[in-house]
Length: 342
Image (cartoon, rainbow, N blue to C red; front, side):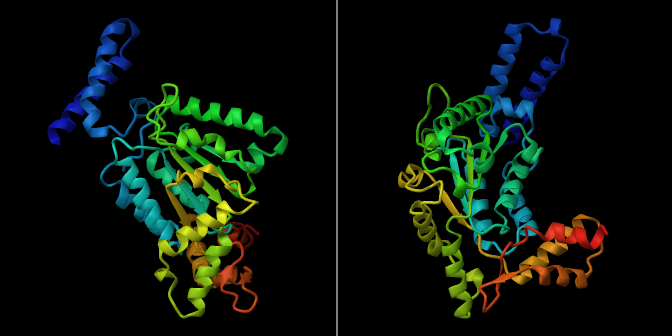
């Protein structure tokens, strides 16, 4: 491994030297041979990092054999009450990135109520892969109500979406695509990207196997809450809820939900979604955790009185038990603005 690592480093150094040298000092043929040699030397060591992306924007510094533990640590530190989501995301992302020859792109579908951490989890994922996180030119976000608002323009959206994905994966095989508000997407539109998620080696000369697709949706949240509430009423810990219990429930609920962008979608019917990731509703104690972390991130001393006040101002459901926060941690930040920016 050390010998391979050294060869890769030497090859990369040579290419960088050539690229940074004055134009007249580098002949096209010499540069081409150097690039070919470098690519050959580093294939075994960083084969999952496309060469183009590596030169254009370095991947996250922890990407490699330590990526999984680093991602897990980040999720545990910043994402609360989501033991299932943490486990699935770490295993799925780390396993995919360590595979030099995946058979298909990775497709994750994150489900749960607003404020439970779906967007936040996506942010943590991309920050661990690209240094620029969501600002990376290789991370692409789509919001259904913003980018695909009109049902009458589905054909145009389909063409644009396919063209956008094709062009960006051509530039960087390790592109990441995030689709938010899938529950508000027009039925049938998401099926336009089915070819990119399937088990094709190439489509028109482009391989999509190293790309990552992340879908965010509120669909299925009711079923997730039903299971969590049943555990609570029976005196069981939420941490004992298993992924197996929720996986089929969520996928069927989403597939049969006419208000979901996945309604009767071939992506589900053809098993092209690799993991359905359930986000449990957040309890009072989780809201307090969010408040503490936000206070620390702003450089304030954690005042437990304010932590409790903010958590107490939230509304909770069901009406009788009042266990779960309606908006999760979504409005914690604006609540704190009230206390500190008067």
